Amino acid sequence: QVQLVESGGGLVQPGGSLRLSCAASARVFSIYNMGWYRQAPGKQRELVATITSRGNTDYTDSVKGRFTISRDNAKNTVNLQMNSLKSDDTAIYYCNAKLVGLQYWGQGTQVTVSS
Image (cartoon, rainbow, N blue to C red; front, side):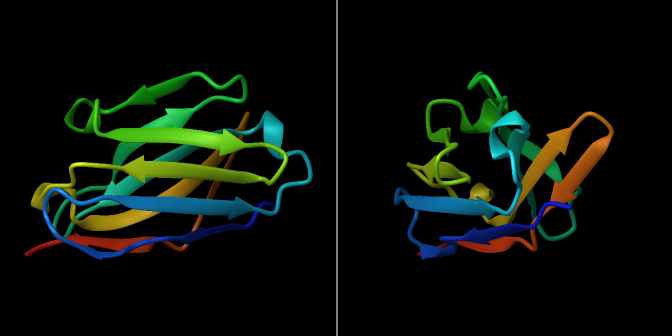
């Protein structure tokens, strides 16, 4: 069982930045592929960014060049640096951990981009 706890959400103006963090309880965090998903009101949950156990990253097109995912295996954390935020980025952001046949979710953290 892996517990994921997100933090760092909040209210920010368009063009601003936020840094989300996810702390994982996994005994061997480094073997998990990690990701950030988001769900806006009335929409399906969508993948935002992923980082593999080897550190390879991928992003959905709408956040490329603005968001950066990173991980610190020594601290069992995965982060999402979000710059140049837009109103369309408003959503609940969820941390996700995957290992073959297993998947875990955090409780989510709200990000609101509004003036």
